[in-house]
Length: 470
Image (cartoon, rainbow, N blue to C red):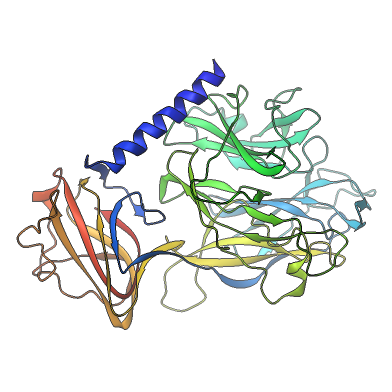
């Protein structure tokens, strides 16, 4: 039955994708649509989908405590009220797989996602003292991956859950406070896979289920399996993710999560592993970078083949297992006055190269992972037929001083609608997260709501990141 469910899901996805390619309108309602793929776009003319690169910021945390070390990894971050929480493995290596102490799970927190502290929790003893930030020591310590459970039916005593590997597979954990943890079952809940990686799960609010993503080997190559559960304990038979058009590559981690502004879209930041390359001549062969992928069904992913995080100029980042993104995205304040919040992700550096390692912060603009981009000579896109609800069209965009964006609304047959033509839309210049588009000094679209329309965007030295009818 579980295998049948997986095949059924894949069949539904294939049918849905075929419908989206036809002229049948796509109902986007009033939801935000980041332009991370071509799902909504029918035609490109001189414009392209362009992967954006994050800005490297400060070192967020240094793993230099006696219970930490140079092989601390598998970080998880998430926002919980006014506090950002971070979890990671505390471990140290003398090289060639020789560890100096047992692996433990550590906790840090921050009020801004920028400055992190390691609280003395007094829970777990390490070398005769409980004055440390260790929260777990046992099964799952190698790759403990927690999350806050947003399932409305969640037991308050299990408000936080986690996955971690042990003998035989992945074990489930729960906590009432994100600090004190217990195993939910004495046996592993997922047994098919190769679990020496960061394996994760979360509540999928759009589909009303828990979803897991974990590693296995597919014809000798590290790849990602997924399965689902109604209760976090009973899971379907895992199936492989698919990446149409992308080459076969080792994906060491997956770091998949719903985007908080558009939870119908999953974002992933896998660590891509190139085992045959060794520019640093390190004893642990291989080199890694961070890549980016997105999905609208949790099975089929558009994976960019270019890196989103390169190793860069730091020589230590060209050593195996560096540039591993943490699981999770935080909203953080910009350090530039009079600018909006940013999105922060984090990635490892210094792994294997000294007595400690670090986690560095990187930032994107809101929705700023991918854009529709065109040069100054101009470019256009036209969407597929869309159904929307709302009063006006908001865009997240950026232009140069010489650039611009104009928007035309067409009917389903590509005919401009009177009053909403390109000539009716004044040039939009600037850089805004939410700009209300106007035509002849009015923005009201109530008369078009519920009718199939196409959007035509004319861009000149500009980027368009997301759209939304509000």
